Length: 84
Image (cartoon, rainbow, N blue to C red; front, side, top):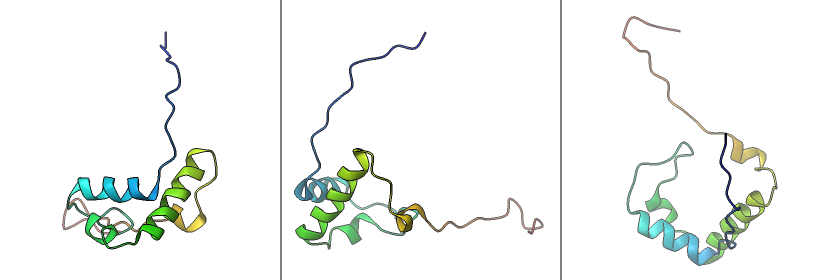
């Protein structure tokens, strides 16, 4: 039997919220897109508002933009003899 609960409501993310969350996260390794928290710490409030707007739209059902569905990844062989 799967238990269910009332859906949790979350307010829209604001640009200032995005900047505060990034600041509180501290320095960390970059994501698959290559962006680090240090990089995001350099954006303006207007840029943060645009990112927050994109996340809000996605949370409401909008699709991720095509270029946001791609990431680079490094794949390593399990041993030095294995090559593909």
